[in-house]
Length: 165
Image 1 (spheres, one colour):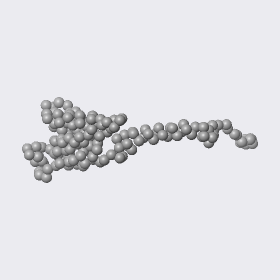
Image 2 (image 1 turned 180 degrees about the vertical axis):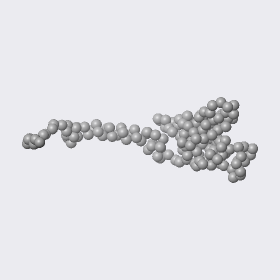
Image 3 (image 1 turned 135 degrees about the vertical axis):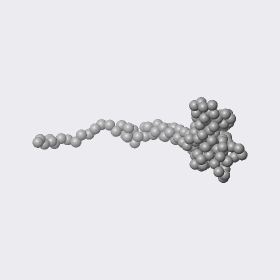
Image 4 (image 1 turned 45 degrees about the horizontal axis):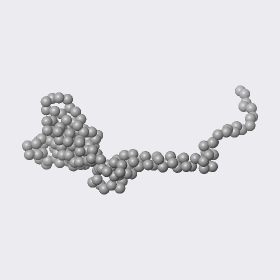
């Protein structure tokens, strides 16, 4: 076995970034980058810092300039779900997809994705007697206004079901 010969320590050049930061050359660039990242995070989503000061019942998103965007305004839509036992599993705050199954036997389709449950109304009587002459249970969902119109139209000629997200 051979021994490693003695040698002088290696000194590498580099560290330009650290040296430049120590001397203050790029502090403005770093500060600008951090400010941009903070601004992006603050406006990233509906539950970010931008909506933290909003009242609990205010569900409207604002467009630049303070005008509300009517296509994103959430409304409460009552929906009769065919399977009351499934509705009994839900609680306010849950997210659900609403599925429409036409009586004609056509393929089922998703009407709304990710709707938030606002209220659950299930009758106290035996199954099948939840409403006057109605099967199923009533579910109140918070959805955009356009989706509420789609839900109302789908409930006229098909049975609705929910899938928990």
